[in-house]
Length: 207
Image (cartoon, rainbow, N blue to C red; front, side):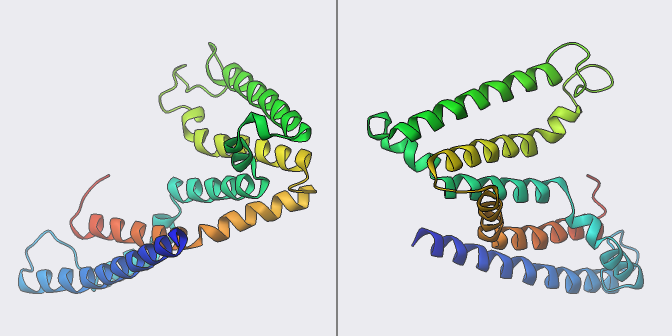
C-alpha cells in the first residue's frame, strides 16, 4: 500500500515537473517577446533550443543521479539479503548461521572503517585534497558510492552465508532489482534536473 502511494506521488510529481517545463518554454518566450530588452532568455529562441538540446546530457548526468543509482543497488542487495529483517527480530531469534553471518559482517565493517581511516584520515592520505584536508577531497566526493559499496558487500555476504542469496549472480540480480525499484525516482530526477537548469538558463542564475 505504501509502495503504491509512493509510486503515485512520484508519478504525479513527474507530470507536474514536465508541465512546469513546458510552461517555462512558453513563459520565457512571452516575456522576451513582450520585453526584448530583458535579460531573461527564451527557451523557444534558436539559442534556447541549442542550449536545451546541447546541454541536456550534461544537465542530468550530475553526481546526485549516480548517488541515487548506487544507493538503489545497495538497497536491492540489503532487501533481498533480509539482513535488516533478521536484525529486527532480535538476537534471541537468530539461527546459528545468522549469528555467524552477523559476526562476519561486523568484521567487514571494522575492516572497512580501518581502510577508510588509512586512506582518508591520516596525514598525507591518498584520498585527501592537494592541500591535505578533507574539504574538496576525493573522499568526500566518493563517500556515498563507497558507503553504498560497503553496504552491498555486507548484505551480499550476509545473504550468501544465510542462503537467502545463493550465489554472486543472485547478489547482482538483487542490485538490479534495487535499481528497478528506484526507476521512477530516477525518471523524476532527470525531469527535475533539467527543469532546474532550465530555470538557471532562463533567468541567468549561476550555481
